Each structure stands twice: as C-alpha cells, then as structure tokens.
Length: 283
Length: 250
Image 1 (cartoon, rainbow over the protein chains, first blue to last red):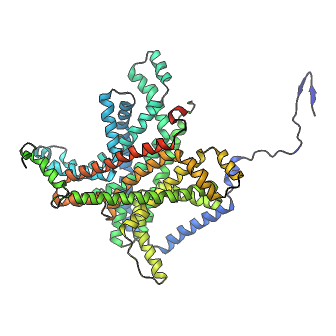
Image 2 (image 1 turned 180 degrees about the vertical axis):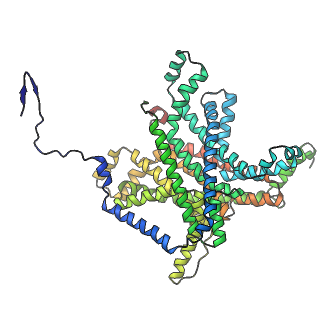
Image 3 (image 1 turned 60 degrees about the vertical axis):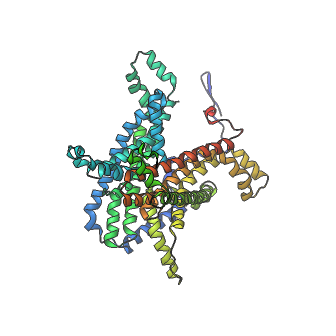
C-alpha cells in the first residue's frame, strides 16, 4: 500500500470501493434529459406550425418598416438608459450622502416617479406640457420649436426621467453599501474628493448595482412600447399598424413578442459580458 | 364665491374642472380610480394564487412541471406588459370565442373588468412565482423536514408551516408587486378599458385642460402608492415580530 522513497513515506489512499470521479460538468450539461428533448420538439413543432399555417405573406411588404421600428426601439432604449443613468448617479449620491437641501428633492423626485405610472407621466409631458408650449410665442420662435413639435423628445424625456427615478434609488443603495473603510483609505492617501468619487466610490457602487442595472435595463425595454401611444413609430407601433392594415390578430403580435424576447436575450448577454470583465473579489 | 377674488382665476378654474358635481370631471376620475383599484386587487390576488402554484411547481414539481414553470416566468418577464395585455386581451378573447363556437356554444362577451384582471393577474403570477419561490427557500429547511417527519400531508404542511413561515420573507417582494399592480392598471387604458388613466384622458380631451387632469391623475396614483406603503410597512412590521431586523442581519 505504501512505498518507501528514501526516508519519506507517501501515503496512498486506500480504495475500499470504487469512487466515481465527478463527471465533466460541460459534458453533463450537454446531455439533455429526455423530457426536455420532448419539450423542445413540442416547441419546434409549434414554431413550425406557426410558420406553415399562419399568414406571413405581409412580411416582405413591411420588412423595411419593421427594421425601422426595431432600430427606433433600440435607439430609444440605449439613449434613455445612458441618459437616465447619468442622471441617476447624482440622484443616488445626493440621497446617500448629500446635504438635506439636495437629498430631500432627490428623494421626492424618486418617490413621485416610482409612485405614478409611466403612461401617465408620458401623457402628462406630451399632452400636458406639449399643449402649454404653443401658448408662448417666444417658444414657437425659438430654435428648439421644430423638436418640441415632434413626439420623440417627449418620449425620450419621459423614459429618461423614469429610468433615473428607479435607478436613483438603486444607486443610493449602492453608494451607501460601499464600505466606509475604502473611502477613508482613499482620503488617507490624500486623494481629492472628486478623485475618490471617480476612482473608488463610483466603480464599486456600479459593480454592486450591476445585476440590478441589467434587470432595470430589461424593464426599460419593456417600457419602450408605451411611446407608441404618443405616435412614436417603434417596433410596437409597426406591429399595431400591420394589425390594422391586414386584420390579422395573432401573427404580428407573435412576431412582436419574439422581437422583444430577442432584444432581452441580447441585453442579458451583454450585461453578463460586462460583469465578467470586472474582477469580482469584493467582500 | 366671496373669496374668489383672492385666488387667481386659473386656480379656481382648475378646481371647478375637478369638482365631483356635474360640470366638473371629478366624479369620472373617482370612478376610474375605483375601477383601477378593483383591477389591481383582483390581479394581485390572482397573481398570488398563480404564484403559489408556480413556486410549488418550481420547487417540488416533477421535471416537466419545473420546466413549464420556468418557461412561463421567463417568457412573461421578458415580453413587455403592453404586448402581453394586447396579446391576451384581443387574441385571448378571440381564442376563447373560437373554442366556444367550435364546441357549439354561443359567443360570450368577456367584460373588460374580468379580462383586465385575468390579463394582469397572468403577468403578476410570473413575478409572484419568483418572489414566493425565494421566500420558501429562505425558510429554515429543518422546519419543513420536521413537518414531513410528523407525517403532515402536503396541503396541511403548506397551510400550517410553509405559507406562514415564508410570509415575512415574501412581504417586501409582494409589497413591490402590489405597487407594480396598481401602476400596471394604467396600461389597460391602451385597450380601451375606462380606468383612471383613460377617464383622465377623456376628461382632458373634452376640456383641453391636459395639465390639470394629468397632474390630478398623477396625484391620485401617488396617493395610492403612499397610502399602500404606510399600510404595507405596518403589515411587514407585524409579520416580522420576533425576527431579527433586516439591518442587523447584514
């Protein structure tokens, strides 16, 4: 059982019964259990029957419009997420460590945004604010007027404010959860306040909030079809138009759902990539 | 009006428009508010029932039930609520009527209230599934094992052990779901169900006082949210009696 090598003895474990080695997890995952194969087959059959028995002859005619709508949906999503996040950082910072004069308005803003439906906010801005502007001649004369007459600036504004409201709350928690010792250490190094914020506080807060941010980005995607109610032609508006033109009930909606599923998958994938870029050895 | 001269004309006009008696539109808004609350309550309740079944399917179900529950929650949480509502509202009623006709029955007119509750409840169910699943997993599993060792049948165990023990863990998530539910009722305005948002839109369109009415609707929604948070906080405090506080546990 044990063999002597000079003076040192190396113990070899005694195998009283064969121990199966842990199977390669990648190979284990690749082998599908039978019930899942059946489910996949049923799913494929559903897709195939949808492709075969439903009417898709309108697709080539509306192809360009669909791509345009898809592009506008993604454009609005990206712009509002980026702008909303830029707004959320000061909102979260004000609530986490700002003086009362900044913290109270920031908290009030987040409460109001999170306490009212996005649809009401959107209509308040588009119909309410939009109906006030034409009363003032100097606004109509200004260079902004061509933009204020269109719908998309209101859509972008409403979605940005909404994302900032929800995200401000997330960032407040993230800023507050960065260990105080980190900030004290940075101060002991003689870093200036902005440098501390840029190098220590913000990166750690973003890392803590990243999972929530991914979820909120998906929620934001799910809010984008609301802009169709104020005449912005996004993916949802295109599908509605196809439904009105062709009198089809199911086909455009199924395509729409598939489109949003695909975009959701892409968002989740991208955030997972970003998450892997950050070394995670935080306590 | 003796003191009308003190208040600026714009403000008095605003209150005239919002007054609950006939020339004002306040009564319409309040009717919409009641309908919104009805739908929110119904959808939340239905979501809880679906969520309980979904959570049990995900935790204790066979492989097929588990996969089906996973498909349900993934799909519903990835597709926008508005699309789900349109899909279930139009396609769902169409499908039910086609099935009824196929079986030789008369077509039925599904009321907006029922359809709204079912549609939003279906969406809420997916989120409730995740909340309840997490809450059940947060119970010390020894409690459930002990109940099983006593020979409790599953339903009794659910009633006496699982549901009461998971409640404090589930409450924050469920409170959030209730707030989402009240706000999601606004989406039914898009399919023409006259709840608060659509009533507001009609009032605003008729009087051209868009700002007034949308601000009023926003204030009503905000009141629901704030009032609910006070109550939910109280419920949560009651349910967590005797448990270590969340802050200390960190």
